[in-house]
Image (spheres, rainbow over the protein chains, first blue to last red):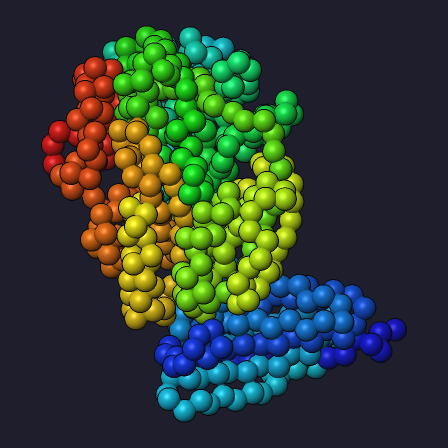
Amino acid sequence: MKNKQQQGKRIWAFAAGHIPLHSTGTEPAFTSHDKVAILNTGDKDAQVALVVFYADGDPVGDYTVTVKRKRIRKIRFNDLIDPLPIPLDTPFGFLIVSDVDIIVQFSRLNTGASALSSFCVTAFPNSQ
Amino acid sequence: MSSAATIKAATEWSNWSGSLKFTPWNFGKPGNEDALRQVIRNCYTEGRQVRLAAAGHSSTPLVETRGTLLHLHHFKGIIRRDDEQQTVTFGAGMTVHEANAALQEIGLALFNTGDVDVQTLAGAIATGTHGTGMKLRNLSSMLRGVRMVDYQGNVREFSSPADERWMNAMRVSLGALGIFTELTVRVVPLFKLTRTEHFTTVDSCLENFDALAGENRNVDFYWYPRSDEIKIRILNEPGQGTTEFPYSFRCVKHEEGWVGEILPRHRELRFDEMEYALPREAGIACFKEVRNRIKARHRKAVAWRVLYRTIAGDANYLSPHYGRDSVSISLHHNAGLPFDAFFNDIEPIFIHHSGRPHWAKKHNLKARQLRPLYPAWEAFQDVRRSLDPEGFFMNHYLKVLIGEYEE
């Protein structure tokens, strides 16, 4: 029986990744970035694998992270280097697969222009 | 074990990062010193070059050959221990990790290691590999004696201080003098280290770095080009070093253990690297230029951190730290990705600040540019000509690097 404490889905996807190249303001607080926040509400650590897709070129992955039980973890796509860095100013999408249910929220900060701007959106949860 | 039994059919050899690949005529895996002497005699007679593969962690073609590529897998272990001289003699095939593990079992240690310890002791010493520490010299400086086989298969021995002129060449020799079979190194009583790691801003790091490097045993920092953050790594013997840090420092790691377990880091992700050693007084200004250039031109593709370390000066002829206290700045890029545009754009900044390249990492300098950087260049060449007058150990890369002619 499904643990009622374990909220969310195991598979998440987002298609409109694009890390802005330019930043203004003090870094790292105002570094332009794409980011996911992962919430694990359950009693078991989540083993999460992330695969990145591009407009041209093969997918790259797995990027693997652990999100501890009853914790959140934020992952800036700018910082990922294993197995490869994600190029800035390049469209990408990603698929997240977890071994337990999780909640994923995607956000972007773009400080390339002098006026601060950002948006936040929840990724698309697969029905599994 | 005979040499003939240990020579295998040639297949492609690759270095650790995969950026260097070549196929030698064959591989030599001698089981002992007599077998090694026979391999070298045979190669010399047949006009076939010999190079030593070591651990393959270098990303320059120091070991590349169309002749025989030697592996000293059978040259392991502690051979002698001299408590009075505070030295231990190792088989030259030992890795730095294996050496520290063996020393730990008898209550001894190496004084320092690099950021990783997968290199062979011989390879790390031969290329001037170093850790960090304002008062600590590179790993080559701990070499007190060498037993080697020369180009004619003769065994030669040198030791410090009796043969200091020879030893000053032996300590950073790029494998150009002969095949080392035994290395006698200075050791210290086993000790523990405490590692703390702090994140902070660039400004705060640069403002405090010299003071921290002076107060603590091992200090270095990583700069992350995609976030402009700094991670400072500080190691001390327990109870020593700085206890009060600037308010902007955020501690993210604190651990303690034996030196061989705490000092080197474990790296699965492979990379290519360029590193230059600079006069200590030029370090911060050079780093600032490197940082600005990366932020302006290379952020799109480059995410790996830049590493800044300190090294005490020494008197070894081809040491990048010869005659001057130094800092090193290292660039990294994921193995398999094109690194030329990145490394080649930053390299002139290093050169402008009187930098000397790490012999085992990517660079573009040749003998014509290197000779003026090394005041004892000719002293090394004198020793090399004495020990290898026919250039038997000089592969094409070494001829371009330290040879008498330009490509």
